[in-house]
Length: 148
Image (cartoon, rainbow, N blue to C red; front, side, top):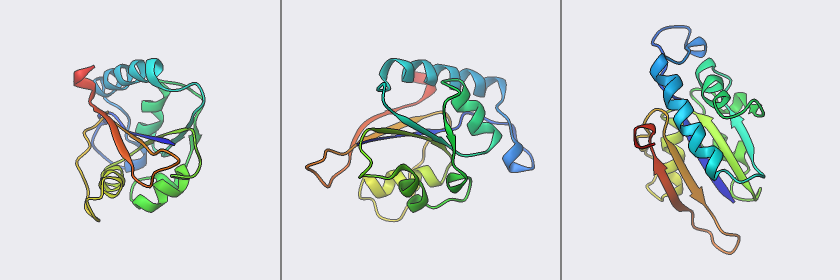
């Protein structure tokens, strides 16, 4: 199974938090990352996005075929994200479009770093794989929009 985590791109500050939209820079970041994903994302995949405006706008740069997952909204636990993705048993590829610090907590857990959180930049992708015959996750890729 592959688990790809995509942190939403740069959004405006303010409240309410769920209504914050992408900035012009954020739209550019989302477009760059979406172009990369179009080249590398397997044909068979599922996409789960937090229901916030900024995550919906981020994933919309890639596709309009995604599922809103309220369980991965801001403040979700790492376990909630892994449960929504059905990691590691679902097979195939799942793309999660979400938030910090939750995505960083998932990354730390998959890398065996304990209960902390790793810093995931806005608009970045972290791509993990787990083979059926292994209990270990492998970090395949980390890339930020400024490298695309």
